[in-house]
Image: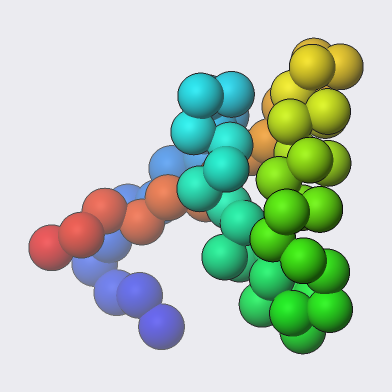
Length: 59
């Protein structure tokens, strides 16, 4: 649990969208290859999808 921290919800820039691959792999129990996740994310960016991130500042 996070205490005494402010979280922010921000759109992840399309230039940084591949940074969510480790989370997607964990959520999917590593059942989808990294290459396929990358392909799908890049296609979503191409179609103007946006991804929100919940950000917790490091102390």
